[in-house]
Amino acid sequence: MTSYLRVVWQAFLLQAALARRGPQNMLMLLVTPMQTAGLLSLTLHAHRPDAVANAVIAPGLVGLWVAALDYAGRVVPEDQWAGRFTPMVAAPVPLTLVVAGRVAAVVLVGAVAFAESWLVAAAGFGRVVTVDEPGVFVLAVAATCLASVGTAMLLSGVIALSRARDVLQNSLSYPFYILGGVVFPIAVLPLWVRPLSRLVFLSWSAQLLRDAAHGTARHWPLSLAVILALGAAALAGGMWLTRRIVDVARRKGTVGYA
Amino acid sequence: MEAAVSVSSLRRTYERRRKDTVVALDDLTLTIARNEIHGLLGPNGAGKTTLVRILSTVLLPTSGTARVLGHDVVAETTAVRSLVGLVLGGDRGLYDRLSARRNLLFWGALYKLDARTVRRRADTLLERVGLAERADEPVERFSRGMRQRLHLARGLLHEPRVLFLDEPTSGLDPVAAVAFRRLVLELRDEGRTFLLATHDMDEATALCDRVTLIDRGRRLLTDDTANIGRLLGDRECVDFAHDDPALTHALNHALTDALAALPEVVDVERLDDRWRAHTADREGSRRVLAWLVERDVLTARHAQPTLEEVYLRTVGDRGMRV
Image (tube, rainbow over all chains, first blue to last red; front, top):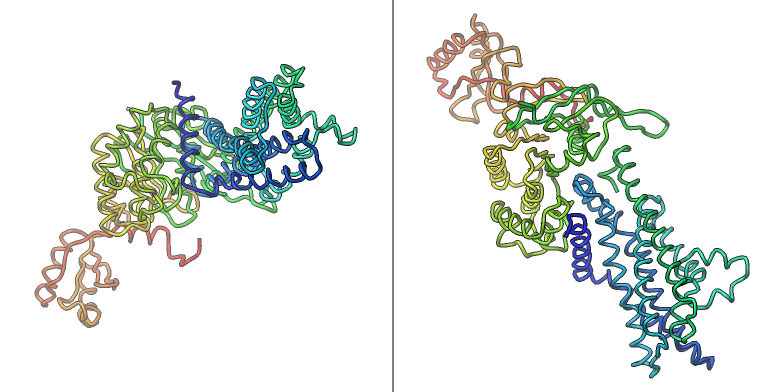
């Protein structure tokens, strides 16, 4: 294993250990069953058995987004606040590797929400959601997780640079559930919003996951490619931003300050 | 042989609001030899931490140059980072919920060490800093002294040749501070170089080969710690007190006036717990000692001004101002 990969792996293990030690890092997994229950109740009350899969997939995507936004977004600011940023910057490896490893662990915890929502549907509502194209579905989940890591990197940088972190974090959740077509397809959104939606990887992920569940994923290679490309673009942006955070802090003398 | 640290005309300014500029380091020049323990002394805001941060590459200088073991801290950042260890004082800087060992495994990876090497070094260092038995406990249960020792272990993981210690014993109890200093001396014997930024004069006196006093970003003096007293005008001193400490301040003015009148004595001053007679030379000190003994003042000794006195006189009394 190269030294850089080792850094990513150790950062991953560190975040996993922090999640085990700090239950608040897994709070989103307590929310997922309730979201699933709420969405499923609405769907069943409306006599829409065709939308059950949508109601089960949505909490999984919400869990990933919460992980990327709330938890990964805190990685750099928390290290700054706790005085760990200075020794981290003083080390010879790029900070981006540490952030990448840690957000990957956070996203993996978020991905557990998919399994949770499935279990809640089966055990709580007696609805076992079947997937008509399981191979495509697994690929879509994997690509979505990778894109979430890239996006979490970007969000981590944006939030660390922001002077109003809490406000930013709070305001970036619901708009992205809508733009990402997480709860309902973007086809129901106004026409002028749709191009914007297509820039959000969640919209491609949500559609592909629903199509794979219903067996209608005809253009899945294209969708997968777009999800990965948007994730890669976000990752590149996140890495650039993280480098910039370090450069600015070294120049302004704010490495040791939160 | 190349110096361990060489700083030339180093300047660092900070822009504040309303576009005024604060000068943290001003034209600082300093050289630290290899295998030296060099003390950096100065009041709050003197520029000590700024210098440590520049040398450990977490802060960019505004102008001037700084080199560590021949590597420029701006142009050769990665090389410098591999060679130096940074040990910051205080409670922060660690993952409190995780164990000491887990912390070291993570920080070791940041210095490109493989897992086996980090584990081996972590075990050795935890033993050395006296934390082996608590290695698997969360750091949040550690005392300040234990955290400080863990900070040092982290700074040593990659076996750096130069260590920067910023207030490493602040808040430690005396026993822990002495143990910490003993460890630093052992590490120096292994060939490492130290730059120690501290307020603690006893610590600087006990540890440092040389000290530099800085104030308002400027170097005031650099000299051997053992000879620092010479800087107060090369004066010799005789310290004396009454055998009964309670009566020290009651030594009558007739005695001190008589002493001050001796041709060998430059002046006599009252310190906190004793009196001090400044003499022109060593022969003068000898005569003053004999003169005091003849008058039943039996607690007397030849002395030189301490580092603390040099510090106070050089930096000046500014009370709580920074």
